Length: 246
Image (cartoon, rainbow, N blue to C red):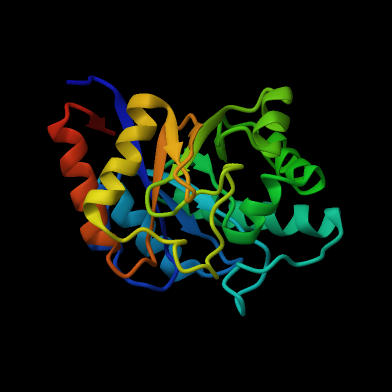
């Protein structure tokens, strides 16, 4: 039995419309705030749902690219990228203010997240955005990534994130969505995947190699077809093992 606290997060407000079903099974959410998806109405709706279910609220900024759902790298000057990310987060914070809530974390989306994990220039823009806030906001980052190291050097409060529904390469990057085995959609496989990460601090890669990995929050993508079923199953199985999802 374990007494460890685990956070299950989900990317929401992306036009899928399953947030009311997801909220009971997650403990934090990452709300799309206009870059790849989302507008005032969807942000407000999801914020109210998160408030109702006592789910921690984070911003999910991306490259400003709704056409490709934020999953394509967009070449931008650093100043323009900074302004875009900052505006997306500020738009969500304004809505949180109207509901008397505070932002808990920031988690970049898609191509922005993946690029910041390996590219210092992109990571630095996100770190500078984090430094522009006086609030004690956490930054969700992958373990042993460029952005994690840079954030720590700048005294930014980070939370290591891993993906419950994605397979990993040997270098801890995610298997490309273009590949057949990128996504995991089997409830039992997802549980074993997460359980190994929380109990052994290791992940089994796509090549069946075990690589060290630390994580405190685990993502179920809200746009995965079986997202609600997968989140419910993961939460229930973790709690049966004595973990607390909160």
